[in-house]
Image 1 (cartoon, rainbow, N blue to C red):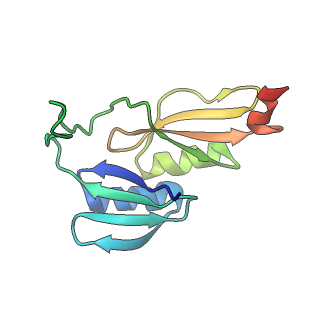
Image 2: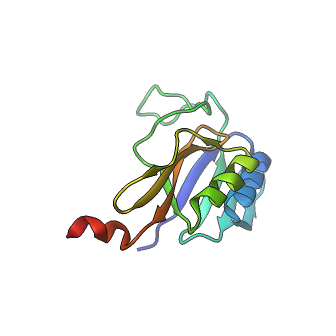
Length: 134
C-alpha cells in the first residue's frame, strides 16, 4: 500500500513556497492551477487548491476555512535539530504555538502553517518512542 498526503490550500503559489522554504521539499509535478506534488519526505505531499468557504463534502455543512483550525490528523516532521527546524519554518511563515516540550522519548514543537493546518516537529532522543516500551 502507498500513502499520499493531500493538503487543501487557498493559494497554490504561497503554499508551494511555504513547503519548499519550511521543509526543503521540491516540486515534483504540477497539475495546472489545481495542485502541485511536493517531494522530499517519506511520502509525497499534494497541495490542492480549494477556495475558502467551499463545501468540505456533501455529507456535512462544514465549509473550508484557512484560519487556525483543529483536526485529529496532522503531520509530524522528524528532525535532527528542532530549533533549526523551527527557525526555518517560522521564516517561511509558520508559527510556533507553544514552547518546545521535552518528553522521555524526545522533544516536541507544536506549529501551524500559514493555512491554519497544525503540524509538529519531533526530535527523537535516546531510543525515541522505544523509550516508552521499557
